[in-house]
Amino acid sequence: MIIHRCPRCGAYGMFGYRNPNGDMIWYCARHQLGQHYADARRDGRDARPPIAAEQPVAPDLQVFIKRFGGCAKITAEGWVEWDRLNSEYQKARRVGLKPAPEKKQRSVS
Image 1 (cartoon, rainbow, N blue to C red):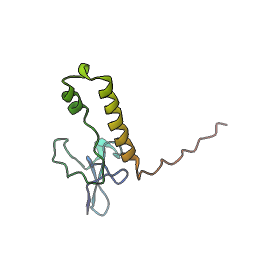
Image 2 (cartoon, one colour; image 1 turned 180 degrees about the vertical axis):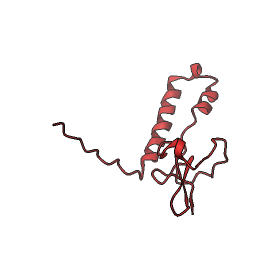
Image 3 (cartoon, rainbow, N blue to C red; image 1 turned 30 degrees about the vertical axis):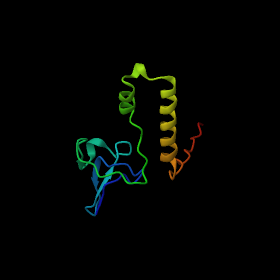
Image 4 (cartoon, rainbow, N blue to C red; image 1 turned 135 degrees about the vertical axis):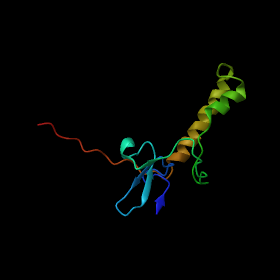
């Protein structure tokens, strides 16, 4: 069995680890168990599986800049539009995410 997506966040897996059963589990760069201990690593140039319809796609800043003909030419209204696009993406991305567990603070004696 191969899990191509990070089991912690669902992102595209870059670092593969083989479990005792021989199954390969892939983790994203953020949740990797250890870059130098991975059993396999996908090159960033590898063809990635298609993005699922339920996953939001982040707005592309480079495409946005090209639309205005350069970063210095982006108007205030343009930056408001960028902020709106980015905000909508962040809201959609957070839907369904579980809150991080609270860390227990160690008492200092």
